[in-house]
Image: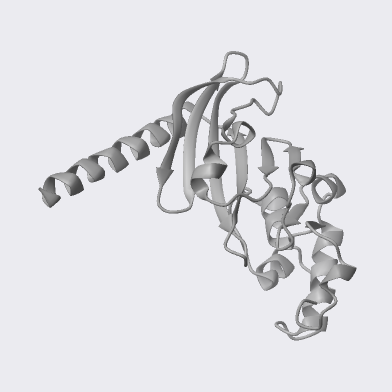
Length: 207
């Protein structure tokens, strides 16, 4: 639509159905991503057309969505942020079963974004109360940040912030806060310690 100069006809961010994600939530672990043909086979949908063609894949996608539970399809929609929020009043906050997603407005830099209180807040997605961080936000690579928080009622929550860059060079944040097990909480601790160890080794090597 941008190529043809008609992007303004479809104002974003756009909510859409990701058939791979929905199939995974309904039939598998919620994390795996299978091919369309795999879903067609599992759901025993008759193969009437060749795959990897626009109209055929649209037809198969519709057939797959029809076989998934409606409460899953209606609840776990995805959000396309090619047209991302520009101002604070456009920021997006969604509570899904199991996690919360927050999409911020634009900032000039990652540092400015990480200074924003809403982006760095930690909240239990179940009782929706602010909770104390056990491990504050730390960087893992150029784009991702993680934290670990604890709700006295619902237990461990892990946070992830992914920085995304706009075509104009600005950034916005996509944050998720998700219930996690004690084992996964330990993995966050281990990840932070490993990053610290590598940084110390790198600094030592530079001397």
